[in-house]
Image (cartoon, rainbow, N blue to C red; front, side, top):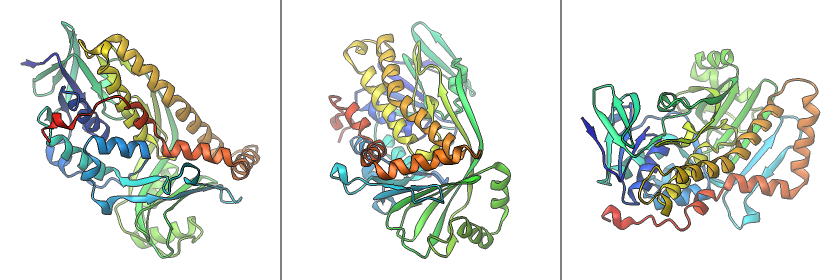
Amino acid sequence: MTTTTHRSVLIVGAGPVGLSLACALAMQGLDVDIVERQPAAALAEPRFDGREIALSHGSMHLLKRLGIWDRIPSAEIHPLRRARVSDGVHDGFEIEPTSFDKDLLGNFVSNHVIRAAAWQATQSIPAIRVHADADVQAVVRENGTVVVGLADGRRLSAPLVVAADSRFSQLRRLLGVPVVMHDFGKTMLVCRLHHGTPHEHVAREWFGHGQTRALLPLDEHMVSLVLTVNGHEAAALQALDEEAFARQIEIRLDGQLGPMKLVSPRHAYPLVATWAKRFVGPGFALVGDAAVGMHPVTAHGFNLGLASVARLVAAVTSSTARHHLADPRALARYQRQHRAGALPLFLGTAMVVGVYTNERMLARPLRHVALEAMRQVRPLRDLLAATVMDASPLQTLQGIALGRHRLGR
């Protein structure tokens, strides 16, 4: 059986980007189907996965307009006031929001908390239907629509299908979209630690020999550790008992935050960056990590994902796409805008990672020069702060009426 309407969109992937996109499209009066591999219970109560999201001001504004931000408990919102970067040898530099009349660079919110809030928002919108515990097996074009075949035999159809199912997107592969993939050969180990010395809501990052260490401020005496090492070292650290692990991390952090205690499970993720060679095609578009999978060093991936949501909604609800959601001109405009917005960040991140993780002797003076330039030149620090704070989702949505009246509120 195939179901479709001419004013519908089918999204594959119920992560925070896919759910945010569903809310934004429904606010435009569209019907939305979401297909997700996980069961509904896992979507309603997602588990802690160790990932903390640095939400920019633009992203927070967009989440407010989508009805997601107000569903995040205030206790789960952790302010980011400054960020400090060094190589463990030289002084390094700090970025701060004061040049922009702000007192925060942004806020940290756990990925699973954002997912839960986004899920709650979709459940309040009748126009959104979720097909959980469903696996996509085929995708074809028929009579101007895209038909997605599920493992249980159902067929869902819509004029526009959107891949929002991670940087290893199954739908992207079924659509035949090639991707540039860079495996950094490293593993990211993440967990929460309680510590003795207050962190003052300052994020800290050290680029050191064979490892990158980042501390993301949560509660005043709690941080999220992001440790980048090789896979063997990550496995060895995970095998340690909680006490031995905490002592090892204290040593790696030079005791800067005092005694530490592990207060969460440890999670490990392979570091792989991806860039889809096409963001759009006949009847389809890619958003979030399915389009661009960032290295997490900037903690900017979800912000970029929300920017893709804003740009796609602006394109498919424009006058050129009014009579057909998958209007090729509208999709091409989305691709141009998102490529232009994502490419500098993607390439800049790759360059930073390359310079600061290169263990060759010739790279060390270059690292020192870069750090010293950032420390001495205020406009460079302000440019970096502007990137971290990021207003692009807000700017992109100017002129788009996200009408809450359509949600029956």
